[in-house]
Length: 308
Ligand SMILES: Nc1nc2c(ncn2[C@@H]2O[C@H](COP(=O)(O)OP(=O)(O)OP(=O)(O)O)[C@@H](O)[C@H]2O)c(=O)[nH]1
Ligand SMILES: [Mg+2]
Image (cartoon, rainbow, N blue to C red):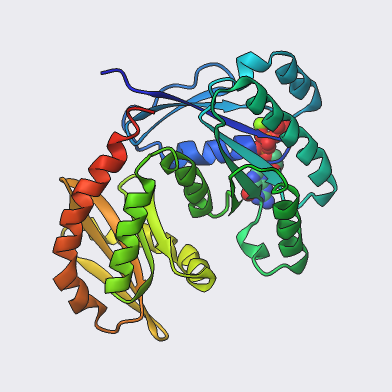
């Protein structure tokens, strides 16, 4: 059976960070099987979720931008996902970027049967800027500016200095193409309720984020910052001498729980933030049933990519 080929565009002004993001993704997913050599200067192959992904990196210098608009069909048609990148540090260019963005959207609307999934990366939001007032204002500005369209866009604050932000944004683009995204999210939410958890997240062994549930903004902020714990946990869980099963860490009145689970013999990592101090026991009881249910849900989730 031929695999569906996905066309992913990275667009945005010059210097916004597109190539850096693509290089980061390549580094993150390079341990994946079947990665293909870069085809030509600007097209990259990624192999993810069993999909054949072609990444187009549209250089943002003005002369190139003009070229894309002259040859609209070649560049923009049959795009499945567009990641649009904005440099959050460079607020003077927000309007120029918006103009470029709207021009691209216009082409999609005119020439495509179906609008691609659109994800906006508010980029260069580096770890040391998390509490910077000016930058936080810039983020809000971008969200307001780029939201004026009737599109369903999703925003992610990203930085190449926090790989998990890039993983989250990229995964979100891919998983949103599955028709069964909601079913999986619902499962995670139910599980969160059963275990008094405010954050539940599932990634595959390649750090592809399959699904997540975040109860509120606070849980999201905390959970997102704790994502690198998955790397630490996966590292130690692979040390066979210790045979570590799970990791539980106390965070004031909350508990972080990490465990590797097997779903249809494929490994996944489950990360949970719970308020129950008996989370270890609770999960011992609930996990087997949950994993059983996940099997069917994940299988269905992955299947629907085939008939995109
Ligand atoms: N602080 C910071 N700098 C970044 C980040 N990502 C990229 N950069 C820097 O931004 C500059 C431009 O990055 P590129 O990836 O070349 O930008 P581009 O969008 O590909 O630019 P064009 O190819 O000209 O369209 C480089 O100096 C990068 O190191 C980030 O997350 N944080
Ligand atoms: Mg570039």
